[in-house]
Image (cartoon, rainbow, N blue to C red; front, side):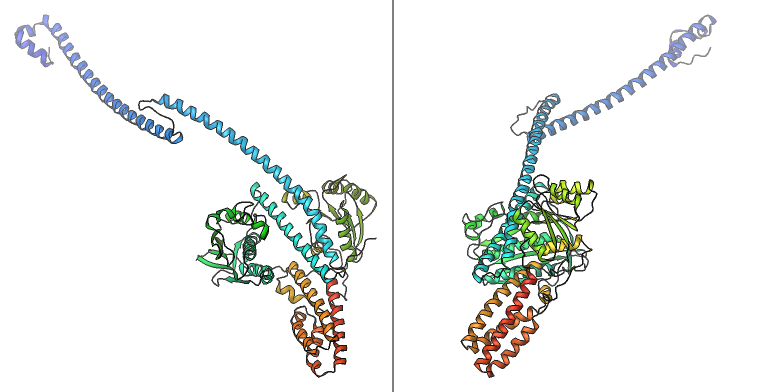
Amino acid sequence: MKISHRLLQRQIRKYLNQEKATDPEWEDFLAAVNQSYIHFEEDRALVERAMKISSDELWEKNQQMLLESERQKILITTLKQAIEQISPDMTIQQDVDLLRIADILNEEIRKRREAEDELHLAHKAVETSLMARQSFLMNISHEIRTPLHAIMGMTNLLNQTGASETQQEYLRVITHSADGLLVIINDLLDLGRIESGKFSLDFVSQNLDELFDNIRKSMWLKASEKSIDFRVVMDNHISPWLVCDPTRLQQVLLNLVSNAIKFTNRGTVELSAKLEHDADTEQIIRFEVMDTGIGIEAEKLERIFDQFQQAEAGTARKYGGTGLGLSISQSLVNMMGSRIEVYSRPGEGSRFRFSLKMSKGEKVPVQREAPFTPDGFNGLRVLIAEDNEINRYLTQSLLSGWGCTVSVVPDGRACVEYLKNEQTDIVLMDIQMPEMDGVTATECIRNELKLDVPIVALTANSLDEEVGRCLEAGMNSCLIKPFRPAELYQVITTVCPQVEAEPDSEMADGFDLSRLYELYNHNQQRVEETTRVFLKQLKGEIVQLRSQAGSADISGVLRLLHKMKSNLELFGMKELLAICISLEKELPQTSSIVASVRIAGFASSAEKMAERLSQMAFPTAQTPS
């Protein structure tokens, strides 16, 4: 038998002789012991290997626990710091555990949710308030615009009835006051749109030179009345075409320039645009309005941008205004990505500026408005649905003067009944009427009567929602009260393209307004204003000519004729201009009797021409039958 285990071999050598070791009787016993030793060694090796593995795993687990402990410490520290930031007044013990922190966080979350619920309720209350405010603005717009439309329209008609010079001055004051009231209403509506979040900008490619020219033409008369030097300066390096909202940018600049002129009694008002940065696709332009006016104290500069606020309590009484213009302008500039800054000192004037980043645009063909020439409509049948008697009379007077056949009804229900039996070429539909409003009447005309007659809304509510409601009901267009005669004329020709106007050759004889329209960039309002000033001045000059002719003041006549030439040329009165030039040359060598006759003849011709021009620009109203 072979003994393989070393310990057994050592024991045999020590305690047994060789004979016993080879004795068959001992062989099985020794073999079993040998096997036991081997198994013991194997088991011990297994145990040692298992112990080593367990020890490694224990060490690894211990390391993991140490790392987890460190992470928990960091987590607890972070949570403590977060809680202390959220609630600085909350005291946290150093030995606080995660469960305690969880309780603290749950309590904080509960408080936050309660605060969110309160904010949600407050937000709903604000929304309700804004809706009520919008409703109020809509109603106040209607209630003020409706009589304002009558005031402005009747003033226009009254001005065409041969009023005396004093009466015309009174009418100009009324017109100016009505325009000021309309500005206030528009400011309130803009404010409502901005606060409700329903105000948006319309970006297009615009020529800044043209925009600045419009501002110059709009403000020069106001500045000249106060003998203020009004300058418009444009940096030559500015791109010809830039992307912006030209309407709102012009609104902001007009407001700043208008304020500057209002608060400046002498000196200069300057509007400028300067290039601050030029890149491949965009430029940064700094717009600035500077004046030498009364100035503003430093502690009151920020207050001027608040709603209904002005620098001084007595400013509104002395200079007028609501304190909304700068607030709205600041909101508009903020929407454009900038902010209006102001620098001022009392007695030294003010400087308002803001910078806009504007993309370079492409040249857009300029759409020129056609001059307002109210030719006859040759029997166009017009149905007016209007409950306000004055507004009904005003609209009927204008249309009758243009050769229209006019019918009137007092409300929407009567309009629907009329159209069941009669035909018309166009319906001018008021919106707020008793019995049946204009929108409901339009829906009946479209859905029940199945008529496609053009319908134009006459509304005193300029909110976008109201205009959209009219168009959705099936109306073809909207005209916002108060509207000008040219706007009514334009909308009729737009929705009734089949209408053939019948020109009045007499009204177009003897003068040409094309140069005036070109000068004002076809701005109808400015042309009308300048025409009024010219007619007033011309009538005064005619009276003066007759007086000087009667007193044989030839030198005075010559000075007046020389003064009249530029205006006659501007208004294209070529025949009168030729007579004027001829009189200048011949009167010094003419007898006083002949001179008086020729001057009187020129005055009569000028008077007839003034009457023709007045009829063309401001059609004489006819009393409705």
